[in-house]
Image 1: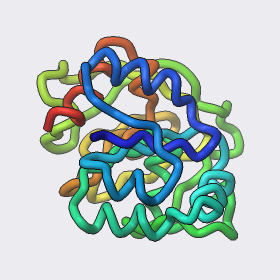
Image 2: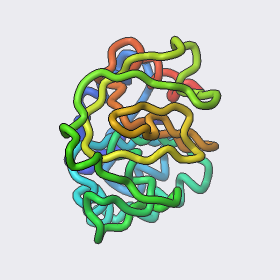
Image 3: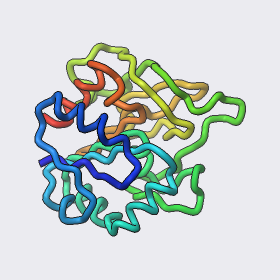
Image 4: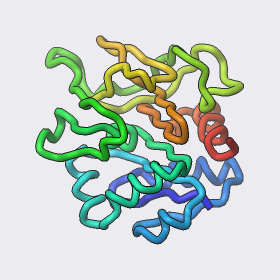
Length: 197
């Protein structure tokens, strides 16, 4: 069973619709037991870094996420769900992330128009399971004001003033800064690749 974690602010209906199109079996979960039952976990994210981390703490699942990821359960973080994998964010300097990876989420420069919203191109920097059987430079849909700098875990980057991590993959952990559920056939294929790998 694939668990889509509902922390109270994700755009869950769009994610559910995408999984319905892939034919995957999933449940919406809001508690530790649901995460522990899951064979794969998706953490969608919209909103504020502080909000998502406080919500995970209020629901008592911060340590469970870390435990399941470290146990090798396939994980996909979408947008804010990707950013939550890092130690901290400039969006909420006092809130701690899951710290699966070192580093901080940054804000686009002050002179940038934010959020970075709309379609942009992915540039692969290493082989990617999520991008299997997808064209070389696909367009996907972004909506964000903060970004993960290019890290060793980056499988694909995007550039909006600065280059940043758009697809992250390391072992069982995957993340995308864009919204696959709003990215048409390319986004559907990315979710399908995660569900079927």
